[in-house]
Image 1 (cartoon, rainbow, N blue to C red):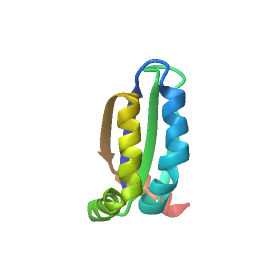
Image 2: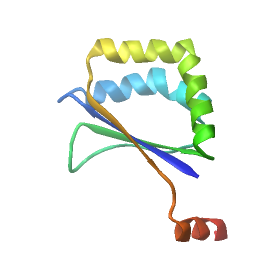
Image 3: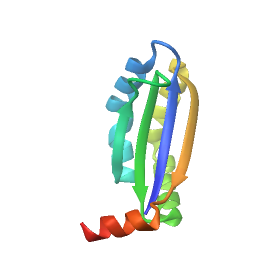
Image 4: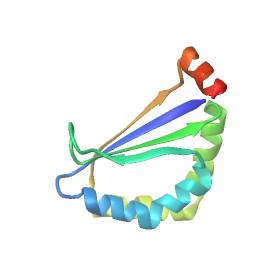
Length: 110
């Protein structure tokens, strides 16, 4: 498994609007194309105004195919445009990770 950890930092006081826009316009599109959402969170301590969402993929090829399909969806382009025009985000990051061997074995044994 490959895990894509996406971290978005909103401008102060913009987090509720970002979450609302995502829930109304982005969530269904990402579920349709990316499929395996492992979590979607807002921070309560540490760096505030932050959203963390985590997506699981079989491998890098699976990730690229799914993200390319999403990028080609006009509804996704409309969502990105709306978020950009609303001026909600300060920064976006993503981190790719894979389970350590001992954890993958633990998961397989469950």
